[in-house]
Image (tube, rainbow, N blue to C red; front, side):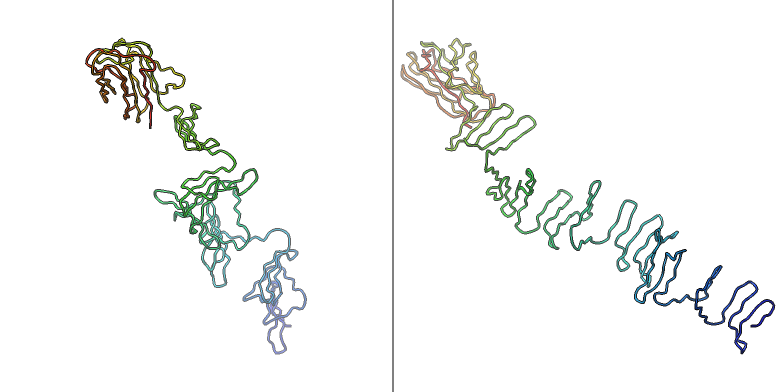
Length: 418
């Protein structure tokens, strides 16, 4: 050992330095040194090159060596073995990279955190959520989304596609004009199901795609619209803004029911007979058992013309819809349609040529003629009429004629056919 001006040196016999200790207490080793025990250093340790550690040799940080950095010969480790968290912090970015510099994770301070596949970004957080580039695949088990609010699917392409094991089974399609629901498997039906009293999978409706049929209550629709109830009646309600109707099938056939009026409007029974309970109709009869002289052009049943009024009150034929005005002798129909019109009258002496004219809205549409002095005349025909058109019957014999006004001699009816 030599000493010069406070600098002490440890040397080999040939004068080569082994270590130098200066006046500040720093020691410098000239070559490689081996410390067999523990090297305790007070102050900083500065390395000019590298700190080389062997496999499983650890850098331990913390009073109890809580943080360890080491390599076991196969893998490298950063272990936080003590209390607290392992925090990696940066003022700008935190990056986890491949040794070549390819990104695996990039976290930006006050910004996005992104994950990469082969240096290609796949998941990135945003100020409103997460942006995913590519597909989401679930290798096994269910894929569940548990959302506190709504689920919003926003596809710029316009299609939502559903697949089973890679095969498309359905899709929702949005075009500029319409929204489409498509079953993608050839000729497979579209089935709507519900939970009926705990029985999940109860079929409600079926669309037979191959036959273009819709079935309610049946899995085998046979018509374009098939409505089936195997245990009771079947009804269809049709409701507008002013009126509601129900068409139903039950044990007495098919009927149309006016819900607002609580009245049946049409019935087809099991034998195929059709009845219209409120079909427009009226039957009228003479109301005087004796002769009445009716002048030329006068209207039968018009009290204005001095003729006896008709009777329309027979219990076996109630007037429905068609009204009779005894003053004018006119019969007014309620709706447009085809009407069968019948009138018969018995004339008793008078003009040798008797005529009965039928008028609709004052226009003559029929003329019955008989040249005998006594007899019965009949008028029967079908006419197309509009709503509120009116009919009357006139004596057109050219002069006064005596007509017998008994209920079995002068009578008629007007009935809506369709």
